[in-house]
Length: 289
Image (cartoon, rainbow, N blue to C red; front, side, top):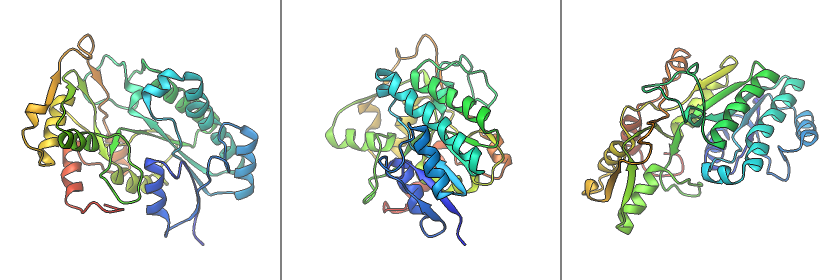
């Protein structure tokens, strides 16, 4: 008998790809928001009790940091309270619980270089603070749950699959429209191919409880990374339309780069940001690339 897995956010950027990858391997539950409103505790408990999934993979979220900054109450309701309500329901049924967190929890750290799961945290935006609170409260309610800190993910223009505003799409659109992009020289963050995340989430189903950095490493500032990605994509004269933004984060460098040695010790590997892009480009841009 196939394992029964519930995926929230099954129509979102990550969730729809995870559902596609899992569809022939597992018995999937892919509820719509109307079928499972994660903001209502009794509704969450009733759904989990009735369907009794063996695993819950929580991908649903408000991930637009600007929107969350403008709507903090809604962000808290979805990005914190939703995570916690599912943790409580999984505790009652014994379901394995995996939820998505973010490298934004590192936003505001004064440290440079790759950051570990135990690095001090002082996120400066609502999204980062809410993701950190969600981690803490989920683990308090269900110590066996697994939180995955994701980087900024990217995908290519794939058939029938939802896209996000990501580094690859942003660069392709800017090049086609002949407009400039400004990228910060005082910012460091990794970018990860979404299909790498999808395939590694399957491996994460057996992880012990805890928080894990879960994505590609990177030692390039954002301006240099944008240049290198554009060059790898074959976009000409990148240094003429990708411009350095030397003022943003000048007072304190923004560092979201993650040390993924903990997940490596569990047998889960991610390519470096540029290595991941080079590998992704070896595959045709189809539904699963």
